[in-house]
Every structure is written in structure tokens, then in C-alpha cells.
Length: 433
Ligand SMILES: *Cc1c(COP(=O)(O)O)cnc(C)c1O
Image: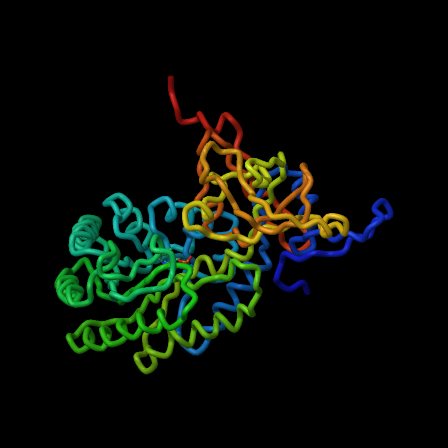
């Protein structure tokens, strides 16, 4: 059986080339062939990698009652949502659009959905109530009141967890750190107690759990342990006050390596599971987990072709056909994705050079990498931007009226297009003159 890492070089035998060549594959499928067939830029995902990471994540938590609720915002492709549902997992959503996506991909998953987010609208809450989701992670007193009113009006009972703000720092990019007191997320623990009392009094609400999410791309598992410790002692206090706390939602946020190192993800998942589970020992809670990036991040690449080479003021540029509208992480978070040639030739490897990899958009911020070392890459060559399965396509836009790229899901030897390339007509479909 083919095992992840799903993206690996394989030697190709060809009498046409003098030097031995190696080519990047996604499982059993050569990426160059996909680029040929579907054009570039192109997102390619490995179903095998997603399934393997999901089951490894799930297995890491076998010591505690739990449900994995995949965070839809990391990659919300219907085909990937269906894959996650078929593997038996639930979902964490943050908008009405994500709710529709999950219901579209897997109508029966409604009862395994948790709804997070600081700004749920009445419409979104109504739709989620009607669908019968598992849990609302409520983030303010006002939201709790709106939820109660809405549930009452539609004659439903909403299961509620208050998302607490543990006031703990998490070492990550400031834009994706969410657990400090001055962040907009969650409710400070001292205030949350009052909200539980309020929820318990309301017949349309059922207190069911406590939730926490301290941010994303967090590699030090001690941050998670610290947050869960605060949650655990809060659970004890809430129970003493007579609340029935069945669920603890530990959120998501586990980091993946972007620097090309490939540590054993099973060990990483286990260390994370230990950190999160240990503070809950003896509480008998059902743990909910909301991983996104850790499941799909390493399972995707963005393929792009070099359009032009140029040198400006002594600086070398590779201008590629993908741009920040396809992958904004380098621009937005200073993310450094590894970039590798799809074809490794002996001749190219000898001539290494320092270069920037940039897109065609009219912004200096439109770059994928700066001053990275690459073998000599000719115009027309294919590059793969690695670890782009999470927050790649899902953060894509039509900036500069660029057409969003197609997405391909590889499953072993077969490849399936799960989203077609946008056409000019898609751009103007919703507009009128
Ligand atoms: C973004 C988010 C997640 C997923 O974060 P990852 O870093 O992708 O694991 C989980 N829960 C909530 C509430 C989120 O906002």
C-alpha cells in the first residue's frame, strides 16, 4: 500500500533523456500529467493522505471518548467534506455557507456539526437549528439571547457550549492567535459563569459543554494543555453549580511543518492528544476536536508553471502563472511554503540559484517565496508549492479578475476533478449592466 508522504519523487525511465530524471508524484499519479490535462495553476489533493491523517488523528485520541469535527474552513471542497463524512467524522463550521456545504456533501452529518464563530446571524442560527446540529459554541451574551429567542420561535432546543477565552498566549502569527483577553473571541471565564446560569434558566437552551480554541498553526502542545487545564477546572466549577457538562470542545489549531521537514505526524498527533486529554482525566467528558490544517494541509499542492524569468536590479525572479489570489498565505501570514520543481533533472540540479517566485498580480505583495534556493528552472517548467491543502483554495479570490483554478482529488491511481477551472462567464454571472 502506498503511504504518505503522498508527494514524492519517483525515478522515471525514459530513453529520450540522457540524464536520469525524477518526477514528483501524488501517490501513483504523476503531477506533470495532471498539469498537462487540466492546465495550471492547479490544486492537487491526496485522498489517501487525508484519510490517513484523519485516522491517525482519531487513533491518537483512542484513550478518551471523542468526536473529530473537521474544521471546514481549512478546505471546504464538497468532495473533501464527503470524504471526511464517509470516514465517520463530524464538522466544525463558522458560517451558514459552510453549513450548506456540509449538508450538500453529507445531509446525514447534521447531527455531527458544531457551529463556532463570533458573528452568527439570526438566519444562520435558524438554519442550523432546523438542520439539528450537535452544538452551538456561543461567543457572547448577546448571541446567547438571540439563540434562545430563535430556538424558542422555531420550537427547538439548542445545545449550547460557551466558548471561553482562556487569556493565554499561543505562539503563532498574531492574525491567527485567538485566546488572549483582548481578542474578539470567546467569553472570559469569570463572565462565562453568568452566561451558563442564564442558559440554564432558558427552556429553549440546553447547557451541554464548554469550548475553547486558542488559534491556529500552534506547534507547542503545552499551549493547548494550558488552555484545557483552565477549561477542566471550569467544568468542575460548573458542575458544582449544577450544570450538566457533557462535552468539552478543544478546538483546533495544531501546526504542520512548512519548512520541508517531515517529522512523524503520528507522534505529533499523540503528543497533542496527551496534552489535551490529560487535564480532562476523570471528568468523563466527551471531547470534541476541530482539526483543519493538520488534516488537509500536507495533503495538497499547488502546481504552477514558470511564465518568465527576469532579473531586476540584480534580483532574479521566476514569474509563475499562480498568484496571491490562488494562495495568499505567504502574503497574509508571511508563510514560507516549500517550492520544488516537478521534474528534477540532473543538469538543472547542478546550477542552483537564488530567486524570488512571484505571481502576475499588480502588487509587490504577490509573492510565493523570496530569495529561495532553487535549481536552474527554465521558462515553461512546472513548480509545486507544497503543503497548500489547508487555507489555500479556501482563501482563494478573484483578485484582478483572475479565474480560480481547478482542484483535483487523487485517490491511489485515479484522479478526479472536483472543481473545474472558472471561466470568464463565472466572473460576471452575478452582475448586471
Ligand atoms: C479555524 C478554526 C479551527 C481550525 O483550525 P486549524 O488550525 O486549521 O486546525 C477550529 N476551530 C475553530 C473555532 C476555528 O476558528
